[in-house]
Each structure stands twice: as C-alpha cells, then as structure tokens.
Amino acid sequence: MNAETRQWMDFAHELADVAREILLQAMNMDRDVEIKSDSSMVTEVDRRIESEMRSRIEDRYPSHGILGEEHGARNEQADLVWVLDPIDGTAPFVAGIPVFGTLIGLAREGQPFLGIIEHPATTERWCGVSGSGALRNGREVSARRCGDLSTVLMTNSNPDFLDAREHRGFARLRDRVRYTQYGGSCYAYAMLASGRTDVAIDSGMESFDLFAPAAVILGAGGQVTDWSGSPLTLEWSGNVLASGDPRRHTEALEILEASMAGDTG
Image (cartoon, rainbow, N blue to C red; front, side, top):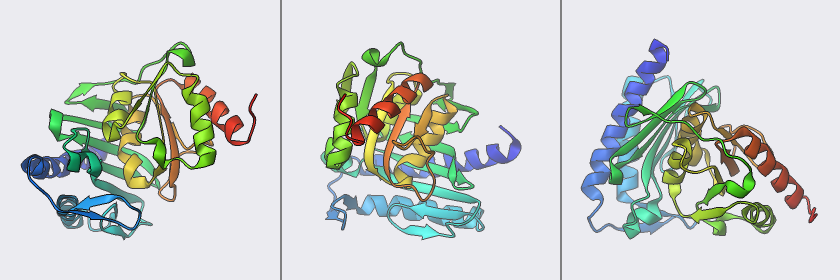
C-alpha cells in the first residue's frame, strides 16, 4: 500500500470510528422509523451517521466526490468518490438483529478501490484494497477456494429482492450448492472475505450497498461482478455475485446465464 492509499485508508478508519460510536450509543434505544419511496426503512441514526461522515470528507478532501444512501451524490464524476452506507441492514438494526454495519468505500475511476465494513455489534472491522490485501481487526484474511459447487456455502440477503427472471437463475444455483444462508446483510460479505463462506448472491442492490464489501473481497483474493460477469461501476445497480474461488465464480455465472436465458437443461 503506497503512502497516498495509506492516507485514504487511515481517514476511512476515522469515519468508521465515528459510525461505530454513534451506532453503539443507538443500538438499544427506541427509534422512529420512516419508510422510503423504495419501501426500505430509514432512521434518524442513518441520516446522522452519513451527515457526520460527509462533513468530514468535505473538510478533508473537498475535491473528492460523495455518494451516500441517504443524502445523495455530490461531484460524482470525480476520479475519487466516497461511497457510503451509514447502516447497511437498517431493518435488522430496527429489529435488534446484530448483522447491520456501516460501509465506507472509496471508488477510483468509477470502480471499487478501498473499503471498510464496520460491524459494531461484534467489534469487528474489515478493511481492504482491491488486489492488495484485506484485514479483519488488523489480521490478514483471505477468501477460500473450494472443490466444486456441491461444497459451496452460499449467502443471500433476501430472495424477495429478486424479480421472476432472476429468481429462476438463483433457484437453479441454490439447488447446486450445499447450503444457502439468508439475511446476513454486510456481515455475509465480510464472512466471504474471511474464508468462512464461498458465494454471495443478491439483487436489488446499489453502489453504496456493495462498493465497500467489493473492495474488501477483491483485496482478499475473491471475485465480484454482476450476473453477466461485468465489474461493478458507480452506474451499476441490480444484481451481484461474489465468490472466493474464481472457478466457482465462472461456474455460477454460467448457471445464471443459462437459467435466465430460459435454458432448463
């Protein structure tokens, strides 16, 4: 990691410290919940965390862009754009199910570059730089390789987010793997980077949901694309496939492509 990247990573940790403090204070408090136009939940805590992070970014790096879930985009065409999800898993946060976290990504030239997954409920933090390594609480982690699809442990946030065509592909892949675990939010992606799971598949996602996890997984030696095999960009939204083993990633893409094209063979 060069000096400039180290500086950005240190700053990302500062942002994660801010988010952790606010979330820990709010975890056991009653909170008002609003339903957004896309039917997702938002709380005052989401907005407060993102506002604080954005303020610090604007002070430290005024030329950088920002894309956040709650407060939108600023200077999104910049070479460097901070991609923020103040609470990934707001519904679990509201329900008191401790799989939520804060996602802090830095996009470079429109693609995932640097990321932090901050998980305050378990005092865990993952950080990574695409192609250059990933850490959990300061210790190196690596995505794992696996023998074939029949050994794969797969995760999915919520199958309700899949449309009918996507569900056909998902179901065919689900039937080929050993087991599918649901509902892990950002923690599921952290487990993939840590070599505890093998594949993560989702849809209905936005850049702020995936840029930080993608950088961590890519740093840990994994693969992250959409279901057609294309890399994520700031313009991307929709489906995502992440894998620890490049061979299993290729196999999964082939199954998804054939299924969604209507091949039932």
